[in-house]
Image (cartoon, rainbow, N blue to C red; front, top):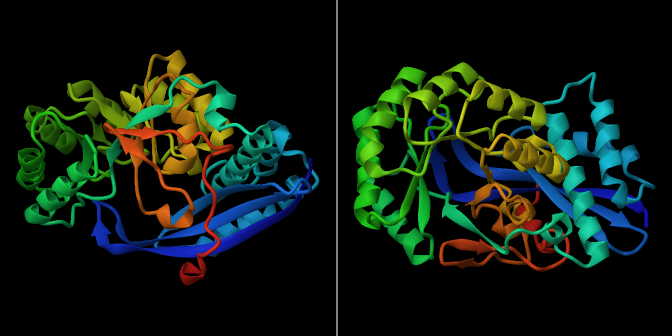
Length: 359
């Protein structure tokens, strides 16, 4: 089997309403959809995204720029393809747009591998579970009022979630504490609560806030300080009893190795687009496991479930519903866990009716 065509499609999915975190203003997610077509009639699919579709065409051009590395290749040689592209991008860098393009191609190749075998990827990787704990991460934004937070928290409970994430980092500790209290008052003591500071605070302020939030029994505090401030991360991690989760902004196993060496967090959160695709995410999961660290997958829930189902140290998968219009299939939640699809490959396929989102 050979790959005979690389196709991309650009879409922009609007969010229900504008939302904010400590460092983001978001109105939409622009996506580059990749299809790798083969002479066997099978198609491998994957996507990347940018907030508000910013510089989406640059990402598209980067993906298409690697066409020569996949046309005529057997997708089973996915590791060779990964390594060839890795070598090619040395002059332009192993972070940013280059890795996003590599990640998308790599994931599409793995989707083909699963489809050829007629098996879901987590079975090919070596399954350890058929469902994984999840948490609602499509709401409870920093821009919401307390009433909006409470209404949405109740909505997540009604959808079957047993855990949910709140965005903080308002620079007003009393306001952040009030936001967590408002949600806890609605969901009760048994529901898992996580908070995300979105890199919004200094180490001292993050420690001060973390101590003030201890009474709420949080699962974790995420990205408390700037992603590049590993020393600051380490200070916060050492100072607080509440676990610190981070790593979604890091690229490849080399950045994750640096986080581990600096003791920058308690839980690593690889992001499929930034980490280097499924090939590199498997390496990162193994690296974390070797250091007795858990991982939790960031975004890309449809494709990342193959990792969640095969990495024994994966404790959860983030549930974000922004990308659901892309797919023909829906994910299912039971008892607070996401069921991992048993369909071949990643278990999802792009909808053929996305013209209304076209760019």
